[in-house]
Amino acid sequence: MERKELLYEGRDKKVYATDDPEKLIVSYKDDAIAQNGKKKGTIRGKGVINNRITNVLMQLLEKQGIPTHFVQQLDERETVVRKARMIPLKVIVRNIVAGSLSTRVGQPEGTRLKSTILEYRYKDDVLGDPLINQYHAFALEICTPEELATIDRYALRANGILKECLQELDITLVDFKLEFGRLSDGTIVLADEISPDTSRFWDTRTGEKLDKDRFRRDLGGTEDAYQEVLNRLIGSM
Ligand code: C5P
Image (cartoon, rainbow, N blue to C red; front, side, top):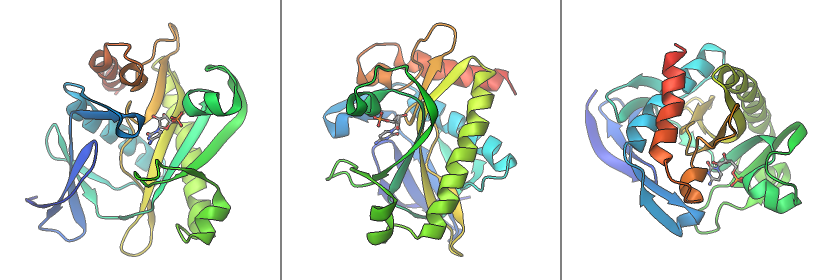
């Protein structure tokens, strides 16, 4: 597969066209940004680790019946994916109170939730990805009710699969973010990434954070934590 022109450069990834109009190449960067751009840095080796972690988890979900954009890993930083028109939604799934939810509802981090929470953010850098609900999504024509029903189903099923897989590796899945796109025929697929950049992973035994909160909160050891997640995932295969 040949890499052609750069189509898009985001905070964490670059996306290239290929010689196949239905396929793209994603290239993971080491750049790290938090607090909506106010905090910038580099996490050495992050791109390589997140490429691997995302691909392992996408393949796991695909095997369990969730359609994803994953096609094939090209090299340590790059992956071929199916071209999808992205839906500008960040779908957040929460099992335990942490991060912005902790602030919003005044409950300490680590509080167990009686049931899973699904949240939607409207993906817009300038607006800082505001929280919206399903009424906004339909009224603003971000997606249709049918599409959102599919997205919710995939997000909740992904939560069950990932929670169980990670629990076996002594990793507690606190929360995570998913993004979805439409293939040319309108099929909804899981796209973007699933990594310590977009999830909260806590070591089940020690409670240690194995995710981007290490960078966001200046805890140090970010790269080692990401590598630890990958090592446990690979060790399990
Ligand atoms: O910050 P907050 O607590 O709302 O984040 C919830 C989850 O969504 C975390 O796992 C975080 O990494 C992820 N997230 C993300 N991109 C954002 C906001 C949150 O991946 N822009």
